[in-house]
Length: 128
Image (cartoon, rainbow, N blue to C red):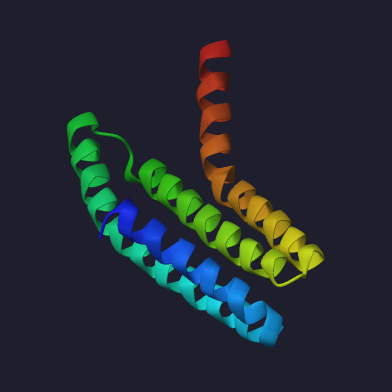
């Protein structure tokens, strides 16, 4: 599937949800969530090709694997947090969506701490 197909699925789901909203509002939310999960899992399947490219880059550059692993964790946290937050906000629970976003940001900060410490150690060596 291409971006055009995924976009068509999204637009079709929104149009059907608009029709259902007048009859039963909760069905519209369920339909939008189902379409969101479909797109989410399709996007996750694309990550395999991205991971393979990152592995090739790692073999060319000879970086410490922890840096690329941390980067991929950050991307994953961002993707999942944005997806969950969007669903909560669409369902009318904006406060919960905001809390998910904050937790995602804190998780990214926690995951990146070892890299920050390594940077500080490197700077300390140069400044000494």
